[in-house]
Image (cartoon, rainbow, N blue to C red):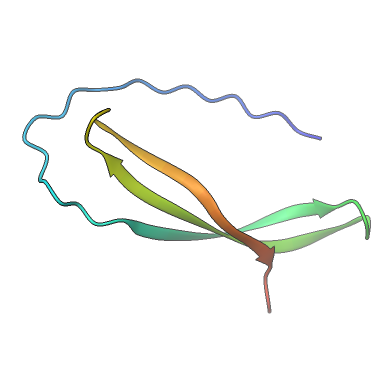
Length: 69
């Protein structure tokens, strides 16, 4: 098990363009497999979108699977 510390500050953004499209980011990470007791490469796909009402970017995990090499 690992812990991750995170901190963020909301900064005011003036005149941010309206209608920003949602986009996705793919990351490959090495993770520990409890079943196999080995390190495996996994592909994580995050959806990134602008929340106009809050004035910030939002990201959440859309997909997580073992990477094909």
